[in-house]
Each structure stands twice: as structure tokens, then as C-alpha cells.
Length: 176
Image (cartoon, rainbow, N blue to C red; front, side, top):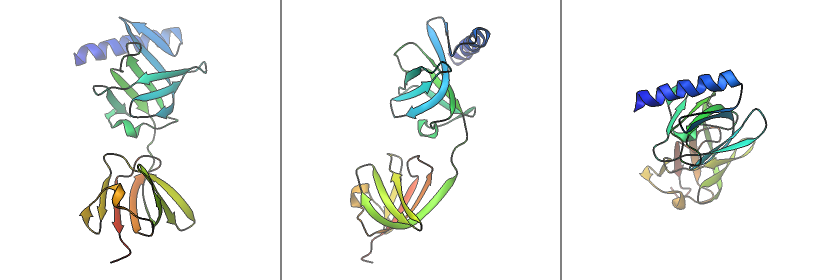
């Protein structure tokens, strides 16, 4: 199956280059190319060269590649160039993107507010909003915790890449 998908992908890519279009068809599959406009858990939106937007459905079996390496969907960011092989509105077989991920940074500060999927941290020079995803590891006073356990006033250290969900959040309550 993998060899077939690779051969089909190469054929579609060659056809799209030959025709100069943002998409090409081969055997019922379509390869759409463009610049990533947005990414969510179920969809990537591309903007084609002609200015049209192309929503690409992402399913549990969609293979995601960033710079030719397997990657989580969260690694794909707006501004990256991508191509997606799919069958109409069905989930994409794969999406391949090229771009540079934001560097890993660690923000340290005081929690200002906490929502169901984000927190606002007061840092030197202002505030930063941190997205929290299902893979984010949260520790409160050295023990595993959930975002609902965090409170304004707690001291936090957050490791993240740009606007991607935080990788780790380490928090100390002010009561210690």
C-alpha cells in the first residue's frame, strides 16, 4: 500500500507540475498544494496560487510529514507550504509540509488567568497566552495535575514552540 501511495503521489506531483496548477487528479485522488492558512484537529486549510482556499479533512489515518519526517499535526503551522493527497471530502491520505518550526522557549511568570484550553502568564515585558493541548504535561508542586487545578497567582514555567500547545507546564502554588 505504501509503495502504491508513493507512486500515485509522484505521478500526481508530476502531473501538477506539468500543468502548472495547484491541484491534479489521478485515479480518483487529488493532490492539492498551497500555503497553510489554518490548522485544527480535523482540518488544514490551504490557500492555492490562484487565491482560492482549499479545506483538507484530516482523519485518524492521515499521515503527516514535516520536512520529510513524520510529525504530529500540531507541528504544521500557518505559513508553511503543503501538499495533501485526498479523495474529495474524505480524510487526506497524507499531508506533507515544508517549513521551520518555532524554537523551543521557556516562559516563566505568574498565572493571570486560566481557561479550559489556555492560560495567560504575566512575564517580564507583558503577558503571553499559552495553549494547552491533550499532550501537554502539567505538574503542580511536583505532582501530575490538570489545567483545572491551576489558579491565578501560581508561579509557572512553560515550555512551548510559538503558538503550538505547551509541551510542559510546571507550576508552584503560592501557598508553599
